[in-house]
Image (cartoon, rainbow, N blue to C red; front, side, top):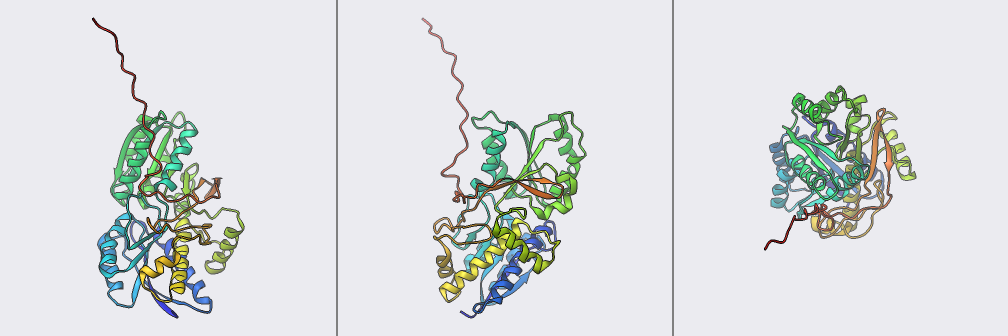
Length: 376
């Protein structure tokens, strides 16, 4: 097909606007690259839901209701994805979702390009447990991402590796009132904090935590959703935070170096790209390949054209599982230092998705041996 209209639905204003702007920038750069080739022309139709869940549903319906658009790349939060799914189902359309999420979902109208729990939280927690961290304070935004990621974290720490959860706390999405959390951390003095907050909530929490003076120093903070889009806002408060992602701008492989050069040429040398940028960029390129191979925009045919076989991307070689519709990804660990992420571990091998944690389960705590005695 010569021309295809695609929807780009990201919140570039509202409570997590930095994440949305980064993802939209990545998607638009990919559109420009596809259109620079001789062949398919993508016509992006952009909409800003402002972080309002109902607006995701409304705008998705408006885009698909045009009748000439059957694919949407977008959504940041799981709340937004879940609000869009019924609209995708009604219109027989396909959502290309580019962000890490909590797993335990599989829908025929979604391509899951972000990491699921066995590719983000599980390897992250396994890493810190091996390093000897045991007492964990869990904090998240009060919606499905926070609930489910912290549930997985709780199960892993409560397993048979000697971990302990000191508290599990939530903030409303966008809330920045976190003084009570800091007081509780000061009282409990955990050696680890699992941060599943997003946007301004995370920024306020990390800033407040950086001012906390504890005898043993600040606990290690780990996160499965903090990216370069957060670092400029956090400043020194991010230093020492351990994050996991499918891509970081400080990777030194030839593919990433070439990608950074293209980003600099498109947005300027000072532009900070994030995992959301790279994954949304990948989503558009994979969608374009599917459209070209299928020769039309039928969602089923487009999906089948890119699923099941390895595809070279800026994330590395990835494969979309044709059954679960999730993507193999490389889980990379990085430490925030002086406004950048230093790569701590890059396994260089993509990890197959396991969205329901069917192949990897939390360790079972050992059962206490009963104290038995023979009585007559």
